[in-house]
Length: 182
Ligand code: AMP
Image (cartoon, rainbow, N blue to C red; front, side, top):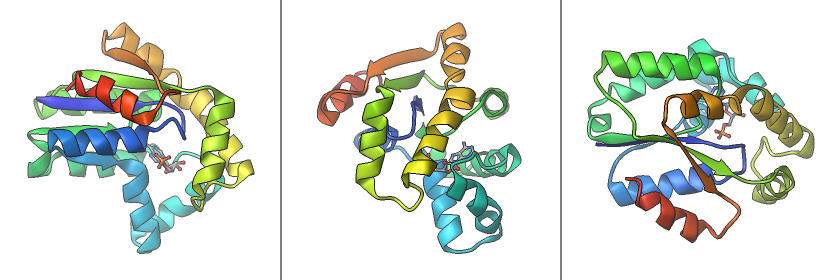
């Protein structure tokens, strides 16, 4: 069963790689950032709650994303596999996910860590022109990554699930390496 978690800083290429692999493996690509951006643009209750955090480059409160993931992973198309992109983002979310997967009798093969130097990340994000990609917000998102998300590298290493991959090489080469994991 193909299930992967993507770790890595904002701008590391998680979205690009997760999308390519999901299409290749014919399994859902589940991006919490994409789901949240959709909720914001449709001004749903979730979107209204999440927007100010996203605009500032902060994490949306755990209870919101946890509810969202629980709902999404219980949908029928997620039974045959999934690629998680942007979740978990901190230890509380990672612990929740492990517990949820025990409950629904699923497991993942790896947490993939895409390694890219900070200066490359900033240049990439400045170049993609998303609404939350102003320089101040980019710096804040990187800080949040280092403080809250990077500790997950140890979390998954301890569980023998970590797969670190150089993300500072051409995207097609990264995709080829990742395909061998699925
Ligand atoms: P992303 O597209 O993954 O870079 O996410 C964009 C923004 O959505 C982040 O900067 C956060 O504000 C929010 N977000 C996405 N995933 C999560 C998550 N797992 N926990 C909290 N906030 C999240």
